Image (cartoon, helix red, strand yellow):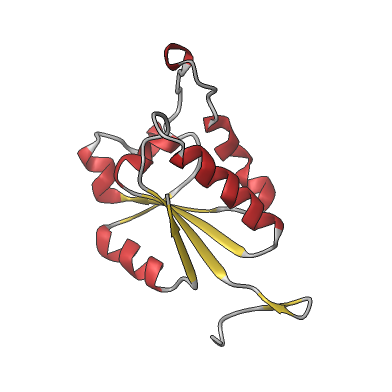
Length: 130
């Protein structure tokens, strides 16, 4: 057990990072990943999210899904803070390749370069990729 882990109500709090690599629509990965994140937070674990590759589009402001015939679930990301999920990391290189800046996102994020993201992932007890 790591010395950095907190004890809470007799249990160990683990660091969970959910890695989002897929575009928000066209597959079920983004929505299902978001649902799993919310469930994990209910168990009072240390939850963070990383957005890499097309996953950066999940946080983009102004998503219009009417033409897709799908529900726009992007407003749910703004509710994450209410679940104590405040650590949202976006890979700098993924943003740059897609022409995005932090102003394009609907929520506050921490931008990490590739090496910093790899180091942040290495700190986690559990990585789950969507």
